[in-house]
Length: 515
Image (cartoon, rainbow, N blue to C red; front, side, top):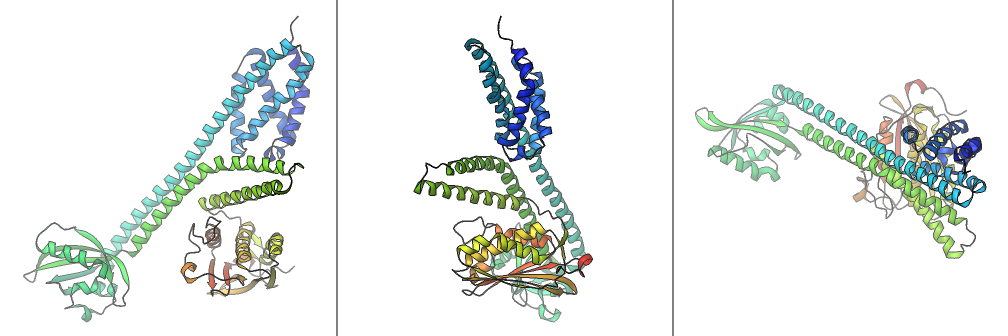
């Protein structure tokens, strides 16, 4: 009589499910260890029964339905693909030893082939399904970003239309030129150029055009008088009386004025429109960065986690000595640095989301310094506190403010020389009658040069050999999202201090954080 595979499965069912769920909870990964054991028993039971239908009856319908279900569950919960693959593999490692004890060699090989076939099909189908659903999720996110860009572009066009209507009725400058001389100008023309009415009439038109635009404007003017094709509307940089330059748009036409051939024009300041166009381009750039970053994050994070895990295992190997042990330690540190860079990129790619609650600024600052204590000890740095004990509570996101303070403290630590000092100040102030909390983080390093100080908050700008140039960008974004501002002052080479100002919040202005 041949081996009864169905009887084997039914007899060992409870034992296999219990062992599978327990090992899944303790051996596979952090995500699984955080799930309730009862939940894992439920999913493992479904997986066991589905596998049984494949192995015993060659029926794949149950396993297909289970794969669809578990893929959605694990993708929505943020499980790594490799962890779920390991979860499926546990079935083989549990069943094979039991099978080996209860079968002869021929039956063992026959049933092992069935189990391998089942798992190969399951893992292959799950991996494809997981990847397809993940890619769809990324595409949907990219489409939402693109839709947002389109909506903002439409809002910009509507805003431009309203702006132009307003300008045509109120702020347009009208002028008439004869032989290159202004013979008529309205009040708006004089105002936008910073002149009085009597200072404009009789002047050459080119004195109102910035040097970089004069050649092109002169060519257009000459062609129009000679009846050659000219653009009906063109842009140039105007020159104001005080020497400032602004983007301006002119609509001009050749006609008769007081029986003389003249050029009548309407000039309009388009500074705001140019700024809007720049903001739209920035939004489009951010949408693209977000799309690329989101697409790559999964592909980068999982390999990094796998490499770090294996290196940490190697580090525990007692046979690694001397330089070999040191090389592994360096590799682990570099992996951690790469993970931090990836997190900064992801933080930059997505909008700032805040969870407001009453916060004690002094406690957050103290906690951040404690977290960095070992970092400061590496250079024997000392921290000098000057915290206002009566500083009111601030209505803010404590976690995000912690990111801001840690970033600035790390920068200060890197800037300081050995045995330097970092000065940390908090105090209450008012800005136009609004209660504010001020935080100052100051170092005694070499400072920032004038050449670089205006660029430090720009994305991807950095003077470091290692770094993304996003740390201070995210600092600026988080502070602005709270309705505050951050400024930097540096006297090269005598140190730098960052000055942060945050609104306290009307509901908590009278509360004190000294408890």
